[in-house]
Image 1 (tube, helix red, strand yellow):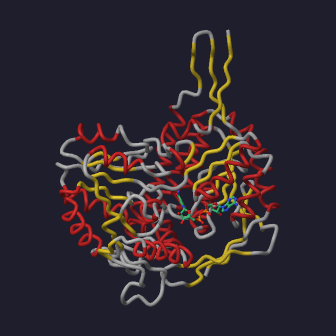
Image 2: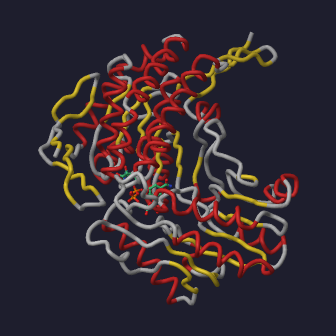
Image 3: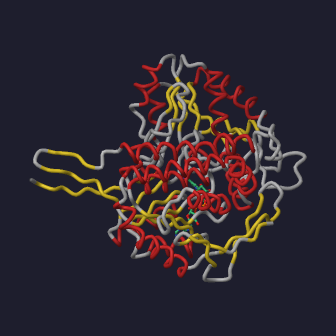
Length: 472
Ligand code: NAD
């Protein structure tokens, strides 16, 4: 067990102000694997003061210097790939192969994109008789969740640093160990003291103190809609910039003429990845009435291949969910689905066979789901897929858009042109066309209640900039 007692503030690991700690639990074994300090408002104060003091120097650093530090951060993270993957597997429960390929490699890639963008971004433009300067917003408070713990940290910290902002990070309670590895990588990369600061702690204490702090110019939050709404209200009251990446209930629309087997299998894999704990997961599969029964059969067979198992075994495809509370929440939704009349065709609310410990949920598929059912409306955040039936393209568009969320989605058709025409009708921030792959430069963020603002690529960088116009 690793017992940590430091916060990374002003370029040093220093003891926390209080004595309280947070226990980190391995969701596969239910054993405590470490402790970190539960930060207080006092720690947040110290971190914000360090970030404010470092701001003028970092904001004035030439973009090439900021790019060099981000390049070094990319290298430091890449060098720690295996340690990052093992840490995320231990504290989140993600299968090791997924931790390596996604939890470790994706943030390395994103850090690399910002090393490049920091050097190349036009921080000045000419408009008629004006010179428009794109200047850093200031001190950023970053509050991140546990589901893609390092990716979500890098998706905020890297663009903020590229823009010339300084940062105080409050990572999720369940996954603070990888956040500590990130702070070590920042130190190795030679980022000046105070430019990046880490305060571990509980949401309603350290998170709230950061969201309310008068020395913070912008809050960037990823997590639940309930907390996001609160953080948005605080920011509104203080007239402070805010970025919110919230939940999703994305539609995977399979149009007639699509490769049904491929579309269904990839759709199931998309939902089962990371034990369903993905805000952009395509948790509603929409299939034409003529192909519906066949799709349900393919989906049930595909889900059965996701056998829950030890996440450290390289062959495992489905690990546990993050904690006991999340397991209760997910199995509660499965029971609600059954009560509301959906047909269970794979999985269920009972613990998987042969599993004696760990917060496991069976890979679950529901057929006969109608748009009014709870499992079609609310974000479950577990390995649960709902399959809905539509009659024609208008019906499919209506069902897909009948959601308070709009984060992601997919469209499959006989050709890209047909799928693209349909994607134009969707009220959502991203759509993958016929299996189009994830692009780390594409803007990521929500329509409707899925959030405010965009992350990744050049759009993610401009979130951390404000403009000043000089007239000549
Ligand atoms: P959460 O919103 O409670 O936590 C996210 C972050 O916010 C954590 O760092 C947490 O400490 C912090 N936080 C909590 N309360 C706070 C407050 N009052 N002030 C400031 N910060 C606060 O999310 P959760 O409890 O980890 O998960 C609950 C549900 O949220 C999940 O089941 C899932 O549906 C959803 N979720 C969505 C995403 C996403 O990427 N959109 C990520 C995680 C969770």
